[in-house]
Image 1 (tube, rainbow, N blue to C red):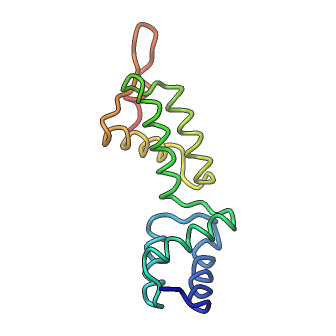
Image 2: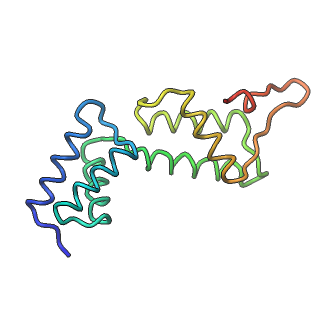
Image 3: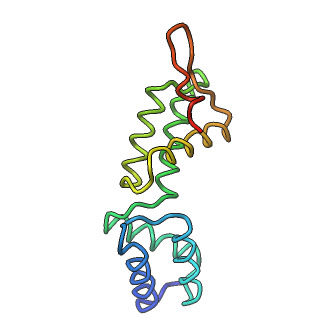
Amino acid sequence: MAVSDDAKRQLVDHIMLQVFDDRYIDRTEEKKILEEGVKIGISVAEGQAIIQQVASEKGLALEREAEGRAKEMLERFSSNDGKVDKKEFEDTLALFKSATKGKLPEPELKKRLKKMMEDNGWKAKEGGLFGSKWYSAIS
């Protein structure tokens, strides 16, 4: 079903109000936007497509998309030996921070990356003779 121009305009306006102060759409805001879309006759899938389009056109950061990119990167790094080393983790952290436009503090990003690794069974390469416990230090 095609979305009317009026309904689409209303949803775009709602999106722009949600990102007015920070140009960042977290999961809670995304859900509110989708709920508003459903109220005006836009399906969840259509709403997600509109959010994605507006984010792309306006340079907005989407939390869900940033997490997806970080997860893909960790998965790629762990695919060779099942482990992620400190440099690979830091590279992923830099991408994650950039994708969220710096809206989340680094300790929070590190926690989320660690949780992704734990949820997917990816191990950290740490320790050794002169190694540090960089991964264990993330709380």
